[in-house]
Length: 185
Image (cartoon, rainbow, N blue to C red; front, top):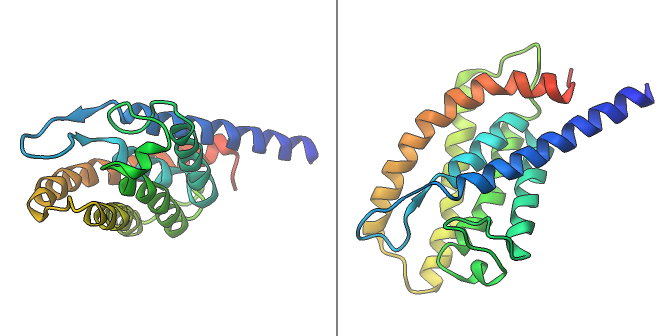
């Protein structure tokens, strides 16, 4: 019994680390859009996918590991940034939003199951909530910096609608596979 529990914890640790690496890698994928302060990135999509696949505790762990690596100076934040100063920069609020969104999405979906598929409506709702939550600290931070421009919001929302369309089937399909790997159920 103890050996199985240890094996399960090892599997969870590996998948949390893999989730953090996935979030980091997606930060390097960006789409420049003229008129925006920063290019559009896919990192927020990775946060929601990882959170949706892993569920509550592991999602927070993966995003927390990513966030810690960035604050400590590794260039894992969007556009290959790193260091505590990034939290004060343009994207700082969004980086904080990533962590909150991971917790919200993961909490709404709970841990994945090998035997029961999560209803598609629940996956949609949790992923949509995750994307929405990212904007709250991001907009507050940009407003505090005097840089919020509502005209820049429309291209970001349009891009996130496309990302949501990719996120939902990815989460729906990969949750049971993650449960098998983490040996849940």
